[in-house]
Image 1 (cartoon, rainbow, N blue to C red):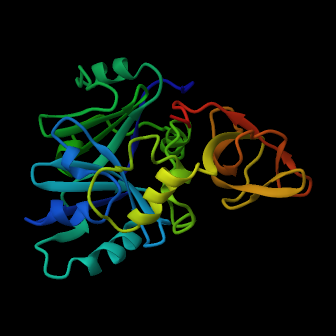
Image 2 (image 1 turned 180 degrees about the horizontal axis):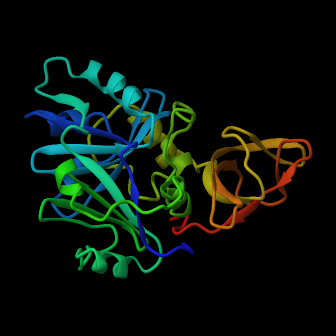
Length: 300
């Protein structure tokens, strides 16, 4: 997936929220699309929180360590998450706060990930999609080429110093793995299925009620998903939200755009229709858009 060899990248600027308290599980179960009852010591999940109209306000990777739930989200999402969830606490025994005083995160990513882990004394790694906890390190294998490690700041200081990987490398990993991570620029605009959240296990259609469930379930059971997040390639950078045209008509918009190893750009775009062909990015002049493969199927 990546042309660069496995190296370390600091994730300290990403949002990391911790939820604790005896009612934490029940509270989060009523707020997130993911079924937290399936969360165990060897797996993590992808979760979204929606408005009552089903629009995604934030997305997060969610993991449990001991009795603490951790939500990892994009840079700049701390205030949106805290301000959204805290009003729902009411009398519940729940505490929601930034986790950086207790936890921090680093990433190991690139080709030959196993070799990179071995050289740091971290072998063997958990299987893709699984996690484990060893010697104070919570290790999440996001893909064949990406590993996230969450631990106390003191424990992480014992690992190799972050390499000089480009700061956008982690976001590039999300793009190539088809993880449409909501940012402050893309909040409250899309339903979860438009972001392919159902294709990465981020929506449970069997759990109890959660905010926005009616719209999300109706989309699943009564109609075909009309828009999807597609992996795109571009020659130059374009702003998030830029319109995508087919035959002069708007058919979608750019969701993310990040520089890759070749100095070109890749991203995700929310596009309507089953045949994404003859697409251009709105501009002067318009820029041709190319569709790249995703690591999962968009239809069941």
